[in-house]
Image (cartoon, rainbow, N blue to C red; front, side, top):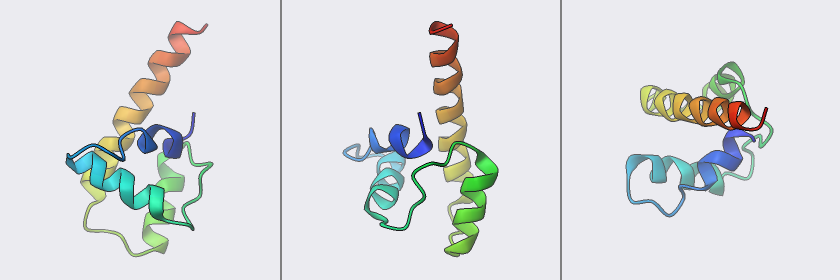
Length: 75
């Protein structure tokens, strides 16, 4: 599961994660294959999105926890 797949599930949520999800979902240039924080950070820097770095980092950490749980369950 990519970060795009995971975050897209929140696009209708009225919380900060929903705002982030809508931004990513509607961005035609967002690289859908991202699964690593370093790749996401590089993309965010390329579009000059620095102000929400901590919020995005927290969302990515939740994504990683979900992926780890999913992988453990499906061993």
